[in-house]
Image (cartoon, rainbow, N blue to C red; front, side, top):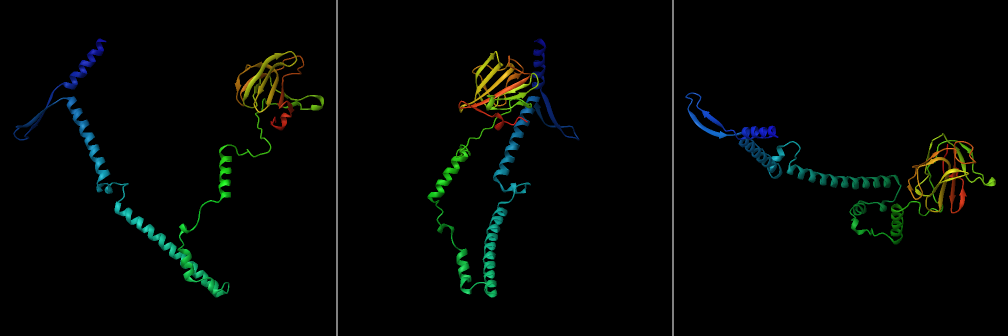
Length: 288
């Protein structure tokens, strides 16, 4: 604390220590004039002078013609000339286009392609001078209905008029299928061979409605994905989610294993149900 106070005192002394600026005659060493200064005065004066210089320079650039001499700023008169030249160029292009159309019509008349009365200079000039305001650009009723339908489809869902729903699901676990979906033997699932402790992932967003141990199939987790779609994962070594948890597509929900009395080794028994009916998971998921 004492050292800090000493530093403050030394700094204060340096700032307010007085100096004298003396201007002398080089021949006679006669004192012409002098100033009393300190470091603080010099710093304040320099800061104020810098601010004034920046402000004056900004005003000159913004409100005076001197900015034309600064690289990057163009002359106002030059801009006006460029604009007038652009208008004249557009007019000349239109005149050239009319003349070319007239000459083409003359060539067709000379070659016998069309009758002379069909093309003449007056009709071409009159056609070129037609004002766009004479045309009715008001959309028809059919056009308005089409625009509304397209806007609605783009805003909400491009597949809303599709007769069949589009279902895209995440692969629950990587591995070959040992037993496929076969409703004839009441095997409403696919058995996927998985490495021990491989992560089991949710096929879609949903809510866990069952996550418990069962005697036959070990650790089982069931997820409701909405729209009457349910996925079932059996024979897990452990579960990472509990009943009521919200899960995202591709989120790890369990660890693959070989639990339960009817297991045949490390694998995942995966079922997919819609509105109470079993679905073949291979139709919606690429297990390869």
